[in-house]
Image 1 (tube, rainbow, N blue to C red):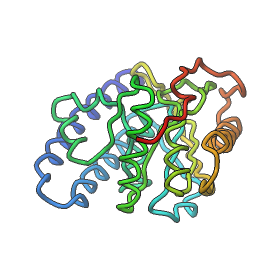
Image 2: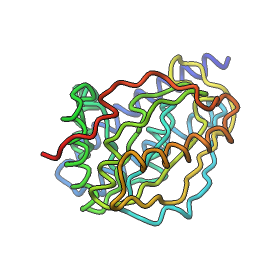
Image 3: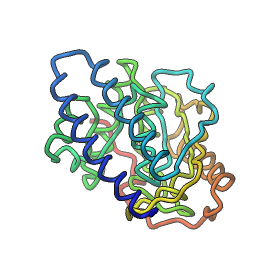
Image 4: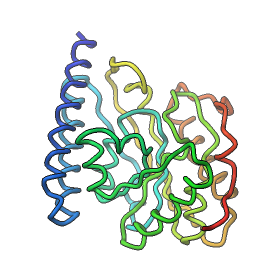
Length: 256
């Protein structure tokens, strides 16, 4: 029965994403506020459905730390959950996403209309410079930028070296980083359809100041907080058990 419910939710997620994408494209001539409101209600609907159909709920700790509209938000990346929940917790945020998503019919077009920032993860320094350039533009417009610093979803108990682009954006713009940890991967796996009932804990940390700091030092502090929190909230977490890291994530590019 759990498998069937999980499959039905996956179908709902697919169909609701298609409908939301059409609505966002149709609202392209209206203000961004309306487009982001569609994304907010799409996220709310899916979080309600996954609670009803699969028994997955979530709690949020640290909402009092959401004090800056121009922060760079680092989300732990384990699941599809965080790509949905971020639109309810920070509904005006602009995520950094992989360029391949922009090629999807309807969905990719809607992401473009929303003004999200696509990057080619395989382009090394060019990708980092894209994050800095377009991320700065969003921050100056008063919209927080969401970054998944590990670059891909990792299974519970794993971590990767955090990419340098978010820390470089923070250092050059002078904006703080808001770290977010969660244990969604324990209930909503990154691969496969089956989901497990339970309550996801989302923990929002205090703002980390970054002005005039070395990007590597910024990353070390942010990663230490997020992974330390993961060790506290996720039984699957094993400190120091890291996945391989590509060299391009460790390179600080020259400004264009």
